[in-house]
Every structure is written in structure tokens, then in C-alpha cells.
Image 1 (cartoon, rainbow, N blue to C red):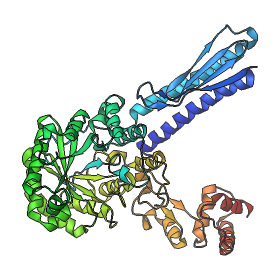
Image 2 (image 1 turned 45 degrees about the horizontal axis):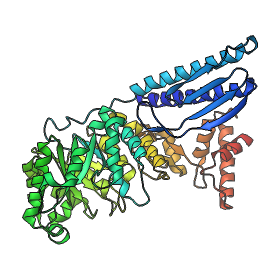
Image 3 (image 1 turned 60 degrees about the vertical axis):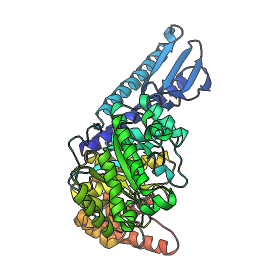
Image 4 (image 1 turned 90 degrees about the vertical axis):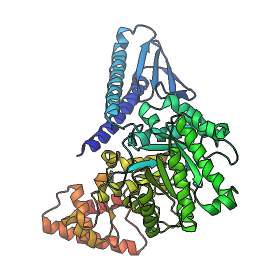
Length: 529
């Protein structure tokens, strides 16, 4: 078992121990004390350290020895006080309560120790200190789930949940966490305000505030939206700028030179105030195909003003991988070594992951994306596919590599937080990513897991699953029998019974039954055989 797997298991055991002990405390009161109970739920209260809302419930117990039990969730040990000295007849109640409270306290302390040992995320303050990052040997991971991801239809995230997600991304050691646009809505302003006191220093160092260049025919120091970026106190700022000549002249209706000045003025002003600046070059690939000279002029304006990262955006999601490679290599020839180039891909053609990997191969050192690929229209590049692909197939060095076995858990955490059903067919992290149904495949897997799997699923925190259906072979059933660890005879007997069970499954499925999600039914058939 890997160290990461052990940490996850220990964390779950610690949480389960605390919860069980707390339930035991309440059970003792109900079972052994002749009491009248009144339950008084309290409103959401701030967590003592994070400030996040925490559901608490006070249980008031009235008896000849009034005892109050205050339970402040898994993080805070239960505190038991006695309003009067217990009588001799009631000493056993008090001792049981104290023993159970000690269990809760001990388990909580163990959980705190475990939490402090859980991964050691690194600060993002100095990631670009030593100069430009060039992929694919090394790649920085930039998450925009909390900004671009929330632009997907039917997704809305509360400020509380944004803080929870930011903390979880930090624990996974994502390099940059783009948390919102403080100049665009009150919720994002509230997030950055609360983040100052409710996120730990490491998480805060990873925050990026998103915004845009100043308005045309104005000055950066007078622009209210630029001011909000400064007020956010995020150490890194990412501003979007038009890099497509047609978008400049016909959409924002600005003079092409004025657009270049908007980039220069905004970047230089922000860097003069100590912010690290990245520039999202909106419509860069389409703009390069329309007028390559002007798209590169936008890059030069940003670099000359002090930008540290140029993010090339496939905003409409229509670029092909070969186009991305050719254009990226051209940009690397001019700017490689001066600044880090980044990639921001949308999935309108289903190519966001492919385009991101292609860009990294061509020299891009920063990849933007979202957890589970959520984002506007058909989504953004999926970091749950990009990160494992770079780590396991390209051998890229990323700061989150040591946490790779937690990526399935991260994926499902986000879906749960956003109240979305997980995508079972998602690469790497989906429940079906390593599920095997065909008999030929399962028979081969029995000889070697590499026969029908591109990686060991435990490397990404997932697991191999063998399904039972009319498409199964004998090996599918034998695997289930082996898993149950039943002593039902020698190999010949086991093989014979497996064929009988398989025949029954196939007949039942031909009648309309299905056994893929009915493992218990299959196990009952095995036991009955």
C-alpha cells in the first residue's frame, strides 16, 4: 500500500472513529440515564479556525444530574460537564460519559495530526523566480474551476463552497488557483475578502484574481475594475486581452494601437504595484490565423510591460492539434526563454485535452484547465485527464505529481460539492475507467493487468472492476468466486459451477434482467450453487 493510500485510509478511519464515538456518547445518555431530552438546533456558526460555517446541534439533557453535552463536529473534542455531583448509584454513567469523551478527544487529536501530515502543498510565490518554464519536461498547473468552470450551465457555487474547493485544490498542490473576477460580482469580491483570513498562507499564495485590461481611452490607475484586482490582495493577477485584430476593431471597437496600449498600461501598472501578471490572450489561435503579425504584437506589448506568462487561448475551441503545435512552436521561437507560455483550451471540438498536451509538447510550461473539464459551453480542458497524462505518459515534472493518487477523490469531491452526478466514463477518474465487461478482456487481465489497461488504476486512486453480464466469460465469474474466498471444491468443481452460473446469467439477461450493477445477486447465485 502506498504512503498516500495509507494517509487516505487513516484519515477515513480517524473520521469514522470520531463519528462513532460521538454517536456512542449520545447512545449512553439515551440508554442509561432516565432523562427527558430536548433538541435545540443552532444556526450555522463559524469554524474556530477556518471561519467556514459549521453545523452544530446542542443536546440538553434534563435529569437529577443535569448533564450538558456540546458537540462541535469532528474537529473539536466533545466536552462533558456535570451540573451536580453524581450520586453513588450514578457514578457508572459519569464514568462512561468521561471514557467516551476521551475516545472522541483522542480520535480528534489523531485526525489533527493526520491532517497536518496529509500532503505538503508548496507556495506558488516563487514558481517563476528562476525564469521561464518550458514544457513538457516541467509544467505548472493552473486551475480555473472557480472562475471559468462556474460559467458552465447549471453550475453555481456559494462563497463557502468556493473556499472549501480552494482549500482542497491547495492540498492537491495545484500551482495556481484562479478564484474569480473580483470586479464582476459581489460573490467573488466576498471570496477574496474572506480568503485573507480564512485560507492558510499556502493556499493564499496560490490565488489568482482574474480581470481584464483597462477600458479603452482611459488609464489603468483610474479603472475601477483594475482597482478591484489590487484590493483582492491576490499575489498573482491574470488579465484578459484581445489578441485577434477583428475582435479588436469590430467587437470592442477599439483602435488596434489603443488595444496594444491597453495591454501595456494595464500590465505595467499592476507590476509596479508588486503583482505577478499573466495575460490571457483571448482568441489567440484564431487571431494568429487571421493576422499573425498583430497577434504577436499583442504578445510583445505584454512582455515589454513586464508580464511573466503569456497564455495562448483557443477561446472558441475550434483549433486542431496540428494548428496548435505549429502556432505554439512559432511563439516559442520568439518568446521562449523570455517568458513562460501558457495554454487555455476549450472543448467545443472535443480536443481541449489533446490541444493542451500538444501545446506542452511544443514548449508550453503552464496549462490552464478545470477539474472534470467544467466550463462555458462544452467545457474547458479537463485537468483530471491532463495531469495524469503528463505525469504517467509524458513524464513531466509537476508539483502535484506526488498527490496523483488523490485525483479521483478530488474529482468526486468537486462533483459532490457542486451537486453533480459524476461522469462514470471520465478518463482516469470515472467509475468505468477501469471496468471490464468482455470475457476475452477479463481472461487476459487475469494473466496480466497490462493487457487491457494503460496504467495501474491505483496510481490515480481508482480501481479495477470486473462486470458480470451476458458478454462475460467464465473468468468473470471465477474472479467473483475468488473475491468471495469461498471453499467450494477443487479447481474442476469451481470451473464447472462458474459455467453453470454464467449460463444462468446469460439466460436471465436475455429475458431483460441486468447484472452489471447487481453484484449481490451474482454473489447469491454463487452461494446457492
